[in-house]
Length: 297
Image 1 (cartoon, one colour):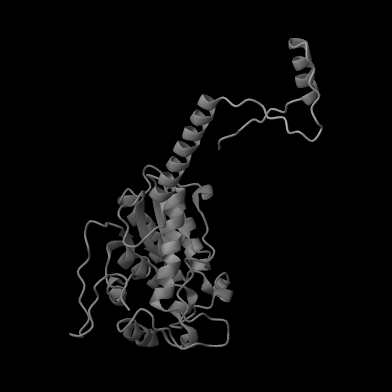
Image 2 (cartoon, rainbow, N blue to C red; image 1 turned 135 degrees about the vertical axis):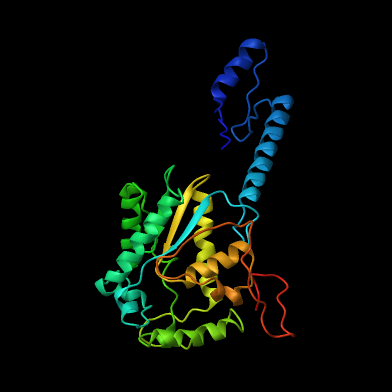
């Protein structure tokens, strides 16, 4: 910030100085404004300095910009992890209401704990946290439990676990809440038509999120991570697959309608490699084309 110091001028001292240097005393009206002398060279220098500072500020702001998908480059290395399955998933029940995300039933099942331990050791074998890493889990019970297991296995202190309160919530499936897990295939059938299609709503507080809705959330998350960190390793831990498939599709520039083809199994670990785009199928329609993946309506 350019700070300008303004010196106050005492009118009394100016009058006394004038009377001592001249034999004629001039009495000014109290309503007359006394203007200090302005050095033209100093004024031009100050103006040029302020212009250069302003232009450099604009350049920095423009360089930062808003994070866009797919990104031109990534400042950090990213590993995507789906937590092990929850108690609800073991029972084969859809549970995406954020009200219950910190409940014990949303925590890891016995099978989920084993899946998560396997994921933690896989990260270790990949050298993900050899030079340290930040772990960003959803505060959903199973995701945060998974983060603690990953930290323990990889020698990461708890202060490097950063809970994410909303951007990594499991995708809200609306009226499918409480139904059998098999019915989620109906949601994915709609996803394949358009990322803007939402599941049917319900009045119990469960969101009904389209692929586009989740895409907004994960883009906001990446904007935070890319702004807050540089040249770091970040492990993102999600309670479900959709957050990660939509995020990965966005990062590598794939059609969001095909995100399900990147599906994560419980406890799966994946390194984000933007230089290699996974193989995926184009929509069956010969009429509908996506000209600007991943943004396809």
